Structures are given as structure tokens and as C-alpha cells.
Length: 399
Image (spheres, rainbow, N blue to C red):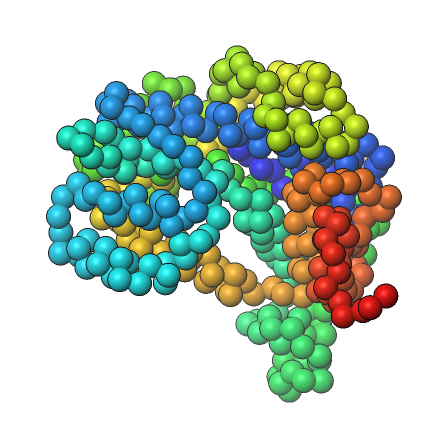
């Protein structure tokens, strides 16, 4: 259904998602999902810094250091700490940031590393690498699936311009007179699509949906140095898949590359203790988990897709605290998502379940807690997550 191209064994994950969308749970699924999510987290967490450091050392020299980072506020602070060169616009942005830092989404969780060039007693920010957080990965995966579903619905109900909120966001008798016929047609088309999918099975679902940015690198590159960056990527064995230039408020160049990690370096260390604890909680010992991990990496696809974004310092600053702040763009994406039916909500919850279930204390399921063709209030999804993670009830019930 959807391929997470920065992962390995991505076909196995795609097939599991496709089956779960049609309520087809197999007994081995939760154990397989445990490996697909946790082993891939370790895999990406190891190959991504290797690639990022390789790029930046070749571009910026040997005086490179790095450290882990866990909030966007940390990244923004390091970006503004030392300017490579002064400019009136940069001075204004940094002064505004320091005057009211709380307006800049500083507490946003972040899973990455920051890279610095050391010299003259200063550490100048040079770039970063990050693994897309599970919530964002589930959200983006769901958006890809939902957009495909909406396209299929519209294809079967070829209408002119239609208000998606009127179609799926409120009862038919509350829609405008001119919208009722298309509303009814689109809702019938949605039900017909679900019926066809259930009858046809998982193979009927689209195979060409991708999320390409689970592994991401940002690099500050001065104007005219793109050729050096592309040469470095070639030296590191990266194959260029796509190059996209962003203009307007957001100005940067986005590359997608296929990178073949050194499996020996990935397997040089045992699994982290926190991952071993998860497997131990599911009755799987450390020796078995490490053996499974070795086989998982050895048997996976040889390459992984990485998103590399580069821009100069001023545009990087604009993307973090200026006219095109990344967090503002995320909020706009969420608000502008047109298709918000019950089906869309069910898809979003199912994808979130797939990526978060392996972190639950008991990641076993006797049945899937959501079916795409049923209807639920959001309260139900809250209760499912509460039960999975054994959170206490917040209801005012003395019993």
C-alpha cells in the first residue's frame, strides 16, 4: 500500500499495511511489526549519521563535531549562536527570536543530530540529520493513502468543483442546496469503493505510494557549491533519484538519493539496551533479538532512500525562524487537508496504530481495533491507545 523508502524490508511493511487496511490480521503480524519498526529505527539511526558526517567532512573539512538533539529549540539556538556573516535581515530575525522565543515552537520534539565546524573558539552550525518522528511518519503515510482514496472516489464520481467539508464534514441536510446532489454522489462513491476493496482483497490497493523522507539531512551550502555537494554524494556511492528546486517563501533544493549503507558498520554493535528491553518484555531474549537483527539487516534491500535539503545560511535561517518556518508549514498542511471523512479518520488512526503498537507494553492483538468501513467517535481511539499503553482512566468514575 505504502512504501517507507528509508526502511529496509519495506515490501513486508507495505504488505502488512495493505492487509490491515482490509481487516486481515495474521497471528505473526505483531511479532513481525515489532521487528519492522524497532529494527528499522536502529538501522536508520545508524546509517544516517554515517552519511551525514561523510558529506559534511568532505564539504567542511576535518574540524567537524556532532551531538544528539531532542528539541527544535536546541537546533534553532545553535543556528543563531554564530552567524557566518552579518546581514540586516539575519540580525532582525535573530533579535525577534531572542526577544520572544516562545513563539517559535521551541518545544517541538526532534530526533536528530547537529553538526558543527570548530574553529577560533566557535562552533558554527553546518547541518543536521533527523529521523522523522513516529507521529509525523504515521501522519504523512496516512495523508498519502487518504489522498489516493479520495482520488479514487472522485474518479468514480466525476463532478465539478465540490466543497469537501460539505461532502464529508456535516450532515447532508445542512449542506447548501447546490451541494446536496454531489454530496450524495461522493458518499455513494466512497461506500462503493470500500465495497470493491473488501471484495477484491489487498492486491487491489495502490502499490506506488511512497514516503521518501523518513531519513533526512539538511546541509548549509553556499551559492555556487552545489557541484561540490553532488560530487561528494557520488563519492559516497549515492545515486541521485530526484532534484526539486523550491522557490518563493521557501527557497531550498531537495534531493532524493539512494544510499547503500555498509552493513558491517550497521552490525558492528549489538542492539541498544532500550530495544532489547522491548523484546524482553515480549518474551524474546537478547541473544535471539540480536540474531534476528543480524538476519534482518543481511536479508534486506541493499539501499535506502534519503532526503537531502540544502540552502545557504540565510535561507536556512528563514526556514527555522523566518518567513517559511517549518512548523508553520506543518500546521498549514494539516489545515488544508481537504478530505476529512470518517474513512480518512480511520486510515489515520490505523497508520498511527501500526507505527506505535510496537512501543506498547503488550503489542499483541486478537483483532484489529479499527475497520475502515465502520464509524467511530475520536473518543474511541483515545480509549484504544489508553488501553494499549496501560494509562489510567481520566473518567470521573469512583468505581
